[in-house]
Image 1 (cartoon, protein in one colour):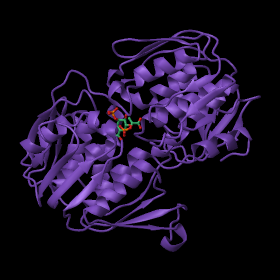
Image 2: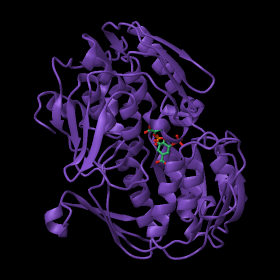
Image 3: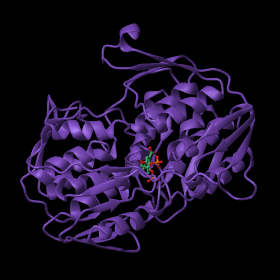
Length: 445
Ligand SMILES: O=C(O)C1=C[C@@H](OP(=O)(O)O)[C@@H](O)[C@H](O)C1
Ligand SMILES: C=C(OP(=O)(O)O)C(=O)O
């Protein structure tokens, strides 16, 4: 007799009976935390990462760096004298070494940012991950690293699993790659480049480049750690980034709240005509989630950054939108969910690369919204969404945290939505179900 796997848990998405009024404290940014960990690990001296995101993606990053020899001590703020409050991680760089195994899970940041780090280690670093990680593109990073002097055995697949035969150093220099499938290819090469003998010159050759704010985040964090970076925006050549070789400083960095993870809570205010406050919303940031202020205002809300944080208020009306989301692709599932509830159609453009994210997000959103009675069609680079009355049913998540939160947003307005495997939110927001019910209780989170 063989064991039958248990059916996936179904989470009844809470329905909002009235307007939502809540203050929701959102944990740290995944993108900032995982960059901070890499830069601190490559620094010439110890550093602090305060208020880090504690989730599957950041734990995978920390575990991988530890496996290569980096010291990461997780302390409570009381013992670290942290004026910012909250948890703090002390990062103690060390000579990187193998043999080591890295589990990338389904984290784009881990699977792209760490192979360049592994080239600096002495010894073999084996990379493996979830089945989906085998399908997510990595060949551009592998080929670029080979061009810069690395030895990598990927069995000719141009994808995971693979072994980086670290030589203890990498020559570096000029390299061309096509990052039209993911900005993370560019970020990956830039982040480790101060430690390459010649630094790096990355030239993007593709026709499009998604998620520019995330590349700006990489550049700003490198500069804050003392690296010299030349960018197209600072008068350099278009699509060319240069990082000079040099020692990185150990920083004391406080991680901003994850503004993309604030999205479902802001959507709750928009949909119910309520008010949600997100404390510590940064007045200036490279996070793409900051665009939600503009996008959700165009869709019917209004907002203000105050000393209490971002105060977002819905009007009770939800409008459709025609928008290019190429720079802020990770916001697409949450925007699609709101658009399915709007009073007019929406067109979401510029996000063909979402087919290569945690799942094929364009197919997944189309299938799941239509499964509840919606009318969504895929285009070459996005979605057309024509709102229709929706009904309850199972909303599948395909191991994608943002599918789970998108389904929860629809569940606020539609009775009887059940989210399959809500636990997949652990990728970046492990406490999501509790935060969601606390928000609905008006108790804050
Ligand atoms: O560098 C980063 O931290 C990220 C870059 C983006 O990736 P893509 O450019 O592949 O969309 C984004 O979608 C992802 O969630 C995080
Ligand atoms: C695309 C995303 O993640 P990853 O870092 O795995 O690419 C995301 O969080 O929306």
